Length: 208
Image (cartoon, rainbow, N blue to C red):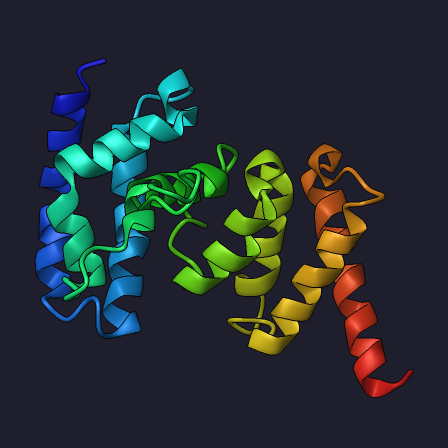
């Protein structure tokens, strides 16, 4: 693959989004959230599907350090003590690499059955994705992850659960994985399971 050309294509696609976000993106969560919600789609579209390099942390570290140092420092701020190396995938196993997280968010959310396969990628904030999707290893259970995203953000109330409630639900779902293979659930089964686990939390709150 011509990775340098692909990186330039990504840069060209992200520049207008960066201009819209402005210079305070590292200080206010709103601007950063909006930038990432749009950027994830552009990064994913530019990448070749199913290429083995995408599963290599070293590839993402190379991409971040070679082509996107300015973007990462713009996103997170130029700190006096120096850059936070985990945003480049250094010392964090690659999971915290900023470019990797942008790509992975769209990769997990991608729904080939939908008219717009990226319709789930922009929903939710950065903390939701990092804490309740990426760190739960749902990259291996993407149908289940999409069911959780739909449950939380695509119902009559957006978001459906508050921060404390979604954290408790995430803990229940994590505990359930010791006995269940959520990776094997189809979308309907995953949606029903998440709904039932949420209902148990609601029953516990009301004492019923």
